[in-house]
Image (cartoon, rainbow, N blue to C red; front, side, top):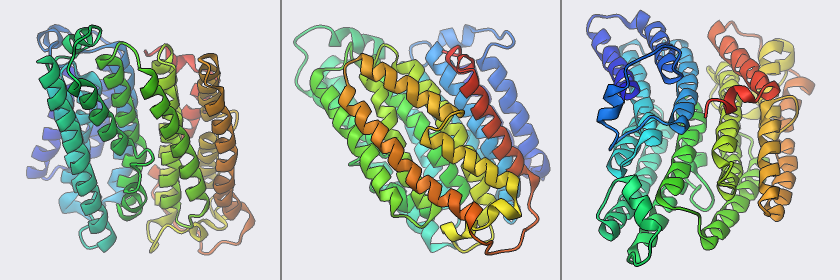
Length: 458
């Protein structure tokens, strides 16, 4: 609870700072504040836990929540670091954009720390409403308006489905408390609307992670939203939703029923396959990464088939995916900031005009494809190994094939950078994008060489 209050207070500070015209210190103060909160989360210094104990029936600090909150904070720091240059043409709205991103983080923290379904729903709504605003924040761009409206409609439907599921679970058990519901689910005699409520909540969360067949909103929303917001959706929001889905299933059920396992198996295969095949056809980098994210959602869903080791595998995979995604979008923002769109030809010759940024983007794409020495390879290796041990060999074969397919569209972008002539002269840019891209890739490689740095967080 103290982490949640600290992050919310930081967001309020950003709003108050606007009154005193302190825009220049917003990003430094926010980054330093989040680093301090990260230290509290990781217990780098001792803070009284009496406040957490008081709210244990609504929110609790566990190894699972601390590990994922640490990832959320790291990704948010990178996003905020890029905000200073990204919003320099909108100074009057700058504090609003920074505050909304921090409030979005409070929703994310609540979504992985809840012990009560009411707190879970509050968290998901805080996160969702923040994203609706950010997706449509470029109000003079019709694509941004379209993205905001589509995301609002689809997100509202998903939230309504989740809320209906919560109502059915409450009607079946008489509780919102996760522990009570978990205990009751071990017995017999629960009404039929209990599994229906669970199913509705799963469907709603599958919308949030953009898994097939609930993915149709993602490409248009990713393409139309401002690129920094697309980066937020693709990295932070996706891993938040996946971690929350795992927490819900693990907290509400003693074990995943065979029928649910089959459903997860089918959705995972469809997400990987449809995402990769559709990504091969894309000429817009943001749409390509949208379908790539759908594919990665399929890989993340595989972790639910191995519940004994799922938490560690999911944490490591999301770390690898999140850091690679941040590095990729830092380069995309740099290249396309003054362009009309994010077409692949804009990256032609980047290897000659800016070798460092081209190397960072190449490394991030190779990590997503699962190539050594990057952590994306080790994340897939660990995931495949545990899935085979659980007896799901068929899905691992499909996953390996899809990993090979993904190399096709990732290399389409890599080849454009290194084999084609530049379409524009080298432009002077803010060094923050280079720092973010390089630092994210360095962290990606470090946790690939030493996975225990992440696994020991749990």
